[in-house]
Length: 218
Image (cartoon, one colour):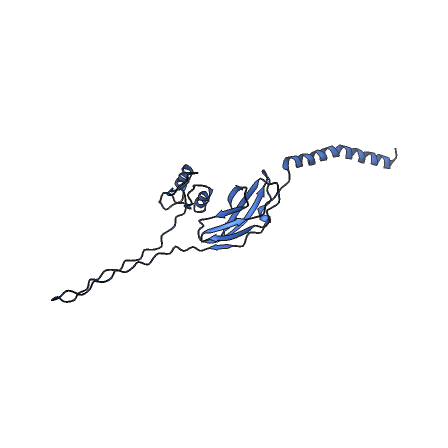
């Protein structure tokens, strides 16, 4: 056997030995991992109230749902809500600050990197609670016949300060902590007015109240 034939023989043998392993590895990788979905397009955040922002986006075909990440002021992006299946989310009862958002699609355990998408333009929430000015009490008139005129001075009420908003504080202790979380869990799904766990006063104890609790956690 010539040298060229020997070389060709060994090359063919090595290829035959290596090919089944490579094919198995490629096939197994595709089967176990699947295809990573694309990120949603058309992500828009709009201020729809004094303390409310609505986020919307375009659908991605074949995904299980969406996640929304929120950035407030100079903080990093944090997961705001998971397992959304619709194409819009209303973020309400927001504290004052600047907010930006990113939306991520997912299919099973697969999801694209949310860092690969540009955040929405920052939206500023600057809500001021106004305090009504008290009406002064009129002073007394002059005295009757025979007596000298007199006046009674009534002190002007001192205006009260702007009340402090404790979003998520269900028990009035000035802190948003595990006690408020227990109240939320106990009343989860309850409807009607006057519920201490209904932080946004929409008549239902749900995920919106949970978001308020997390955003204001002490």
